[in-house]
Length: 129
Image 1: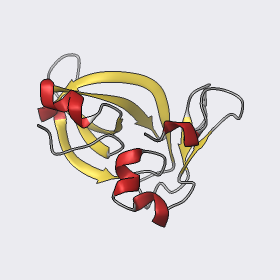
Image 2 (image 1 turned 180 degrees about the vertical axis):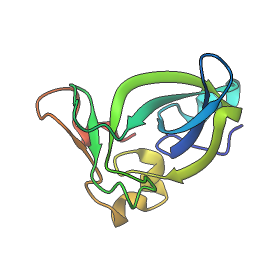
Image 3 (image 1 turned 45 degrees about the horizontal axis):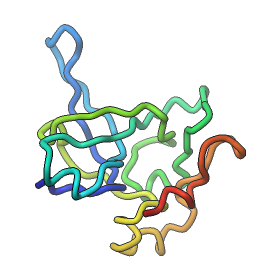
Image 4 (image 1 turned 120 degrees about the vertical axis):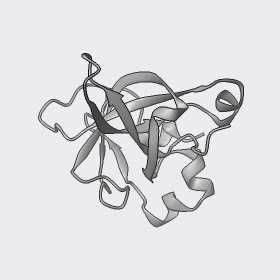
């Protein structure tokens, strides 16, 4: 079982394609604790600080500092399955995800995650669960 839960913002270690270097990038865990119990992987979505290219399904993180991010950021529609050991640490937890609500983060940071383009994708309220 992993020490991270659905809705956690984490730091992920990605190896360069030439395998000669490593970079760390933030990600948002979307897989459930039940999924983590039966597998050695975690499903996450990528987070970027590139705000110039917002696409349908992307979400801005309004409370990015409170979430543990270094820059204004966007949760993207890029989904990846990663090994648990690629996660190097927890950054925080944005509002809109059930695990965060149970820990009270959402109550302290209402509206931290909002849709970039209204009318596309699901609203942040629908992400809870």
